[in-house]
Length: 324
Ligand code: CUA
Image (cartoon, rainbow, N blue to C red; front, side):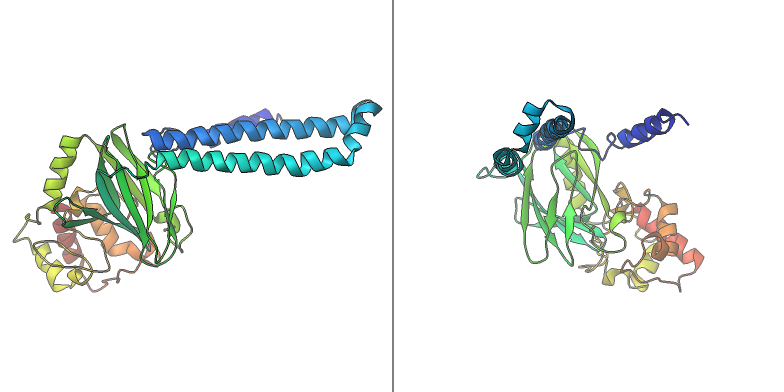
């Protein structure tokens, strides 16, 4: 069989993964640019080293005796096998630190500070507003373009890693510690991120969206997000929400506060996804989540609520979807 018939589709399939909304190869700001530059520099350098080693290996077999005796020399083995990697890797490490340290804008005051907390298996996102108040949302980080963003990355349970490849490099979320990630995004638009550290069974289902908005649009969004939930005051789904005790974990500001273990749902209907990047966001998806969440996201901490009737689930789904 012609090998190219296998190799070419395989390479195409791999490269197809390099584009799209969750790709470090389409950087949306200077930090992601630097990470990409560092990546390509390393790829080129290591390719050159690989080719050099292969050429020397080949020479050891087929070159004239004069060359081969040179390659047998112990001093060459020490220099190339020990000194060369130490020097090259140390220089690369220092350069990487320098490059990404500059990317961190150390000392500059941030324009906006957002705390992102990794939970099994979703993201609690808290905006620290200028007036000292806090605003909680989930599974979506919205920022104004051009602003210096500071993310305080923490964990509620186990190790997670925050990674929105088009925005910046990944950074671990470590229990008992706050890691700070600073970056700017220049290109408006929606990108996708993914938890990049194995954190339990549903780790692969722990995604999020990053949305970079024009400052005016961001201010409008923030103002709407700060408002309490108003829609459907008399909807039957609202009664189901309250009587079933959803509020023990989920806050809906203006209806039940302060929530707790689960994501804030005050404006859940306006988010880009359900279940941390798992489902689209519409009434059908809410209904599917309520009925099948233990299979959709295995071992998630929400109780099953099997006692809800199909009608109650439908009403609850409609109510949640209307919380925009
Ligand atoms: Cu959280 Cu992997």
